Length: 243
View 1 (cartoon, rainbow, N blue to C red):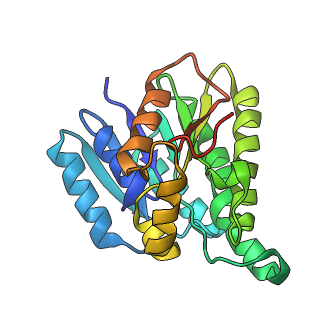
View 2: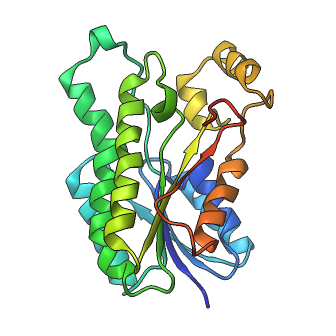
């Protein structure tokens, strides 16, 4: 039976690769904010792989955008089976001594509040799905902190906690898990990390390479398909963080 999926932040990077990987036989809502051309490319690739794609534009850094995405999805389907909360971003690097209230609001709105509200809004549709599940995206920054990205790590740490809370509250009807990517070679780091910083990340990683979007997408696929896992966060970081 075809699954109906909503993947946020799916125009590029991990979200796009997840959409491609899960495409065959499934119906996927591909969310994007500003990168319509890239989202259209992802949609085309989903369709080439035997899936059906719908583009949904929304700015998830605010309540109105989350409500808009929910409204558009709910008009087109009365159920969903998979929600991948992947949208997020560093916004900007800033040291602890320079933190500004407005930046704190922006970082948490994009990375934390959007996942919380969108999950809440879509629970009624998930409850009508088949073996429904939510997969959230956190970050290695929530594990060990990162100078100039500590605020981002804190926002992702909140999602780690929220994942466990949702898993307990929504069981047994809906499974909820998360992935915590390490340094993944995507447009995220093209924007926020210099080539020198990326090389240093690689040297510090036990597997001596930075990750690819497909590495994380396969972990998401595993969590979607394994129906005896809930409340878990899988680290995908090449050994950069171990526990």
